[in-house]
Length: 107
Image 1 (spheres, rainbow, N blue to C red):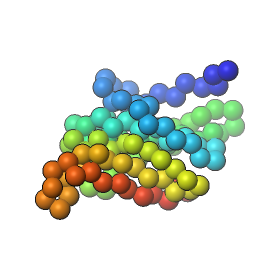
Image 2: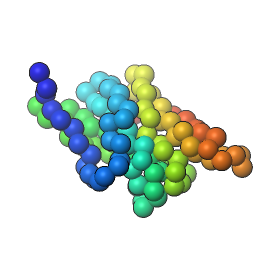
Image 3: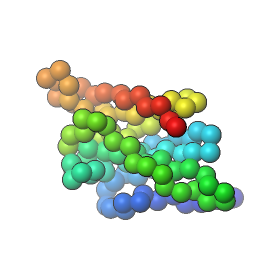
């Protein structure tokens, strides 16, 4: 039985919201790798939802501290209270589209 349909709090075309989903104790994180946070095309974003009573509520967006257009941040994985976000096209060390992973401790 479907309990709740989660949608992006910033609904827009081509976000790819839901392309990656992971769950933790009373929480869900949903990736949207082609979202445009801060106006950065395809920088990517992830959205945290928490179960409050009988409903799932949007809590916070997650972006990388060094977000750039085209990074596609938003692949998500979790273990306990540690979340890892992939950005398949992040640039670093003067390498284009080298990719990166970001580790975040959940509250």
